[in-house]
Image 1 (cartoon, rainbow, N blue to C red):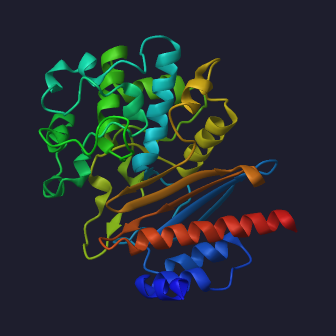
Image 2: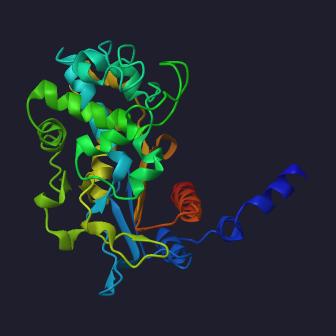
Length: 330
């Protein structure tokens, strides 16, 4: 009875997507997903022993009615945290950083402005166990999002900690904003340049970028928020990448080939091997499925306030994995 009752609290559009018969192919599922209010969708599937497969449906650009292109650049949002965490592991192995050093060691000026700064280690920041407030939880942040690190950080300063360091888990984008700044203090230049030198170049990833200034904006998939006509691709926030580049990186992360000797042990002790991403107009899922030795990357360029689209994206991702897994069993 409890399970039946719980269905009344789930939007029926999500239930419908969940219970529909499973299509025979990934492309059919991608096509079906567009009927649920998404503008465009990209899926990349890398099955071990097979050439990677690319799928797309819907629109890359709504205004100009340009069809979705599986090779478009996309704002990967928090998937970028994987690249930052790999960078931290590399710098720790090189003994240029210590996971036991504190936020106060690097930014003494934040003592008193971020509660427990002298107790929050780099390890706790990477693990989201610092208790530092998440700047995106501050409603004022979304009124007029700043375009600088300093301006963004202001939305997390002078606030009570979520919890005492290492006493709980609390996802906070502020952790990784500060970690990027720490990387720059240590290496002496832009953190994305370090990511490029240590991760992208060795993996020959030529379609991953740190800002709009590095790329042709026409290569970027448009992003839309339900109820608004704006195209969010022009906002320069975070990393851009193709599904293929993310997939290659994720394969290297999971098989260990992105690491030098001793780095993977450090990484495994501090962070995860998969991630999702969400920002206005863009949502993404990047996971490795060990049981079928397969990487599945999913990009969708429509988000909404209620979160229905996020729930739907997870349903469709799960169904795509089921289709791939079913194909393995044939």
